[in-house]
Length: 186
Image 1 (cartoon, one colour):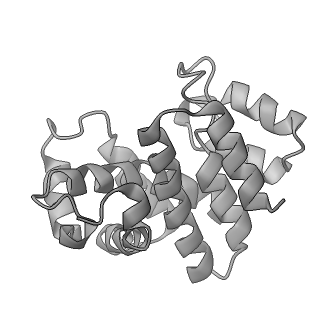
Image 2 (cartoon, helix red, strand yellow; image 1 turned 120 degrees about the vertical axis):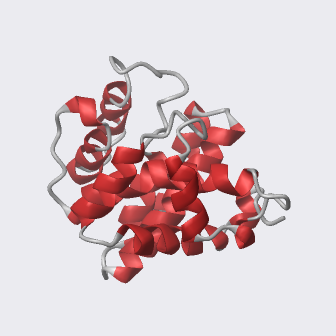
C-alpha cells in the first residue's frame, strides 16, 4: 500500500462529507505543487495536505481538532514531521510554523477553500474562470465565504515568502489540475 493510499484510507475512514474530502484533495494539490516548486518531498507534502483535517468531521471543536487527530496519527505510526505540521496549521494549538512544509500547509489551507468558493459562484462553476484578481476582489467582500479567515490567507503567503497574488495564481493552477475531482471542471 502506498503512502497516498494509506492517507486516503485514513481520510475516508474519518470523513464522510464530500465537501471535506474535496477540501482535502484541494489542499493536497496545492501542497504537491509547492513541493515540486521547492524541490521538496512531494509524497510527504501531499500526505500532509490530504490528511490535515481528517479528524475534523468527528472532532470539530477547537478542544478536539487537531489534537484527537494527532493522537490517531501517532498511534498509526505517522512521523513527528507530519504530526507537527498538522498541529501547526491551527493557530490556537500554539505550535509554531518553523519549516517550509508547515508554512505551506497554513498558506494553502484557507486559500484552497476560498478559491473553491469563488469557482462555485462562477456561472460555469469552473476553475477555468477563476483568476487571482477575482479571488482578491472576493476577499474584500466580508459576506462572501465569511468563515474563511482572510488574515490567514495574507499571513500565510507572507510567512512563506511569496507574493500574495502569485500565491493565489499558483494555487488556482494547482487546483485546475484536479478540477474534475473537485467538481469544478464546468
